[in-house]
Length: 493
Ligand SMILES: C[S@@+](CC[C@H](N)C(=O)[O-])C[C@H]1O[C@@H](n2cnc3c(N)ncnc32)[C@H](O)[C@@H]1O
Image 1: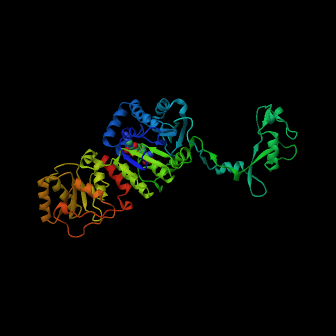
Image 2 (image 1 turned 60 degrees about the horizontal axis):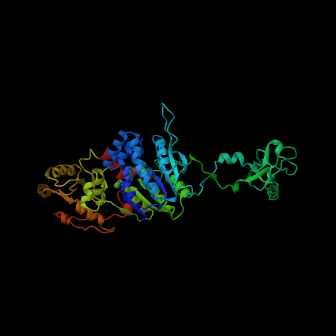
Image 3 (image 1 turned 60 degrees about the vertical axis):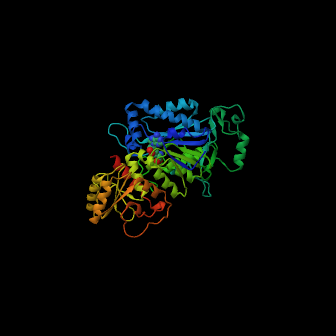
């Protein structure tokens, strides 16, 4: 199984190509039944439409759509593998019934409540503040590294408050448990018989002797109570994590890890899941990977990973996130031919074209006079048309936009241009305005150039073939994620 790969695909199709029993851990955060907006922004438009159909068709359509994917996900899980499905209370109960059917009821392990926010007030009901994470095992023998977390200071101060005299603080724990026992633990020890109190010792008397010889038993002054077990604060291994997670904050606007992706999940959440249910070198799969939180954390924790997302923009964002971690993902199924480009949805095509020329995205869709972005370095306006035979009228309108923006150069990217458009570009050149007509096929070639290739300096040429190439940017200088998102949001507004 290839790892370190980002697939730009519908996950159902891609999952069908992955081998049986090959993955150790799956985390999926699919589009929620509750929120269409994220789909409009992040889904490919056909997907948006079909989601809306599913929603119009009701929850059963949504669950049916998810079930096909869960069937595949179970198939690719190793017998020791785990699946975590992140959802919200709108659909969690339907999803849980479906997961029970696919995995078998005995494979359910937890319903984790993640309190993602403290503030979501509602005048007419209790404020909804949590998501749910449904956790299933492929078998009963899953990989499990019990996670632990810090104790609350208040808890420590309340219980671990007795000073041993050497600065070590300890808690006095009961040495007996409820119920009479007839074995060793029910026998009297040092004259103290637990049975009449309907109790038994936590360990047999000979083990109590060992604890006492180690100084681990606290003896109250005569007649004031029974001996107790001294448990030291410094020996605590951490609190076992339960199924209500209140210690992981949602990504706030100031968080350093925040990319601006609307449904981005915090790295701490994925860190807990990945550490608990996989080991270094294991394979982690996220079939709805968005801006790549799972794959980035898996990379950092030295797991192998595979990511799938239908959105080209999401793939672009992930690629950059991983490059920053010095990982070089293999990206599969992004457009490599003009025919591929024609299948992209308009806003995905626009993002692709601006990225291909290393341009900067325009955050505004309307009111920006048809300027979709700006050429790198010179900041000359760029207009993108996902069309063949772009004609004179487009060039005319763009001429006005360029002049209003106070520039004397602009670029139009399209599949092809009519003779009228070429003539019009030649005419405006006589008036001191250069409009470069860039074919999408040329932009594809620009995109393929290795990082570091340098632009041809010198005066602006007269024909497209001599178009100076923009210098390639280093990964860290590429258009920001914020620009990508703003441009997507504007395009779908
Ligand atoms: C809720 S977001 C995931 C966010 C992610 N957990 C993160 O931290 O960034 C859901 C993602 O599913 C993707 N998606 C929707 N339908 C898909 C499909 N059929 N195949 C693959 N990805 C899909 C969307 O493009 C979106 O990026």
